[in-house]
Structure formats: C-alpha cells, structure tokens
Length: 257
Image (cartoon, rainbow, N blue to C red; front, side, top):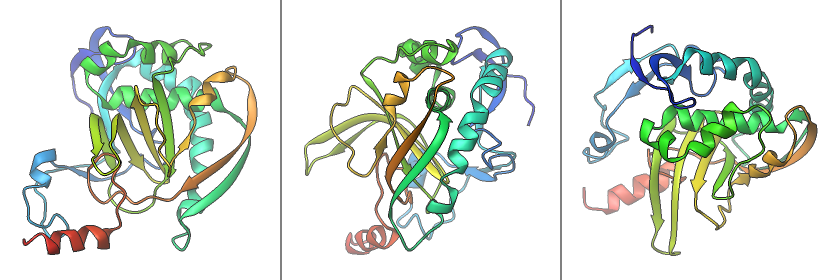
C-alpha cells in the first residue's frame, strides 16, 4: 500500500510526503478491509444500485487516505487511538443484535476527550485540503493535546451501524424538504459506529447521540457515559439517509424503472 504522494497534511498543514491514515484506525478491525472505490455519480447511474455490479477499483489493506504526514500520523497513534479503540469496540455486541434498534449503553472510565480528538482527526483525514484550511480550528483542536477549544459551530454525533455499506462522505449538504431541514455535514460509517460532523447546525438529529460535550473534559480525565443510540442502516452513499433496504427497493420499483 506504500505510495510516494506529496500533499498538504490535513492536521499540521505542511507540504510533505503523505502517509496512509486508516479511517477508522486499523486496530478497530480496519486492517484487512476490502472495498471498492466507485465514483459518487456513477453509483446512481444504474436503475437499481442493489442489482447492478458497480465498476470500480478494489482496494485492500483497510480503508484510509494518504492525507497525513508521518509525525501527525504517529502522534494520533500514540495519544488517541488506544482510547478510541476501547470505546469503539465496546459497541460491537450491541450493534450485532439485529432484532433490536434502540440501545442504552453505559460505558465506564474512558478518556472522552481523546475519543473526540481521534474522531475529528478522521474527518480531517477523509476530507480535502481545502476543508482543513477552511476549518483550521479542527486541526488545532486535534494537534494540541490539552486543547478543549472546539468552537460551537462544530458538533459530533454518533449512531450504531451494522447493516449496509461503508460510508465515507466528505462535507456536503443534506436537505429534507418535508421538514425544512438543511444540514451541512460529513459522515463516516464503519461498524459498529457511524459518525457525523456538522458545521453551523443548531437543530436536532433525533436518531443520533451527540458527543460534542466530550470537549469539556481534560485530556486524562476518565468518566462514565450513558449512550442512547439507534442502530441505523447505510445502504446508499447519501448523507443522513438511513432507510431500510426494502423501503429503498419499493421506491425504485414505484418510480417506473
């Protein structure tokens, strides 16, 4: 998987040779993941995305991006990944309970600020250089170990995920015309969790659990949290779309295709 790619690091901003950053970290069962890269518009050109064999390059060795310099990559691994791994793995059993969709999960004695910093680093790694330049506050929050300064315009939500496709969606806008709701966000799903970063959104995501308040804890402070979470499917690469496969299929069948 080694490539020589030079670019601007999404965290420190320096132009240098990039290293491969697994998103999420490879210790969260993302070491040998195989996946196919398909252009966003190509996916929707087929009449039925569930029946059409999408063309795309098959990648293996884990989902990730050449977007961080070596020092920043190592910094994440040494400071945040272990805490994030323990946190993420704690949701596996609940996510696999296919007969239930809502859970209240109590987690004890984990370092929530480290979890939040690792989560935000994943959004930096998967988005463009322009995103990191326009949202430098995110990179500053991640790179400064002790910083609790995450501006209010940024919010992080999570949900359980064990059904559908992996979802790595860069910053875009989702509009629900029925409810007049517009959300500017980026989304990442990799079982057992889905994560959503919103910018300038002051509404509610009713099926998500917000973890933005993790920023209020100090870096080594451990606490207990009760997560109230829904298990949501991600069948299509559409921001905040959690329809069941049968619902999507019925919509396709009734559309005249």
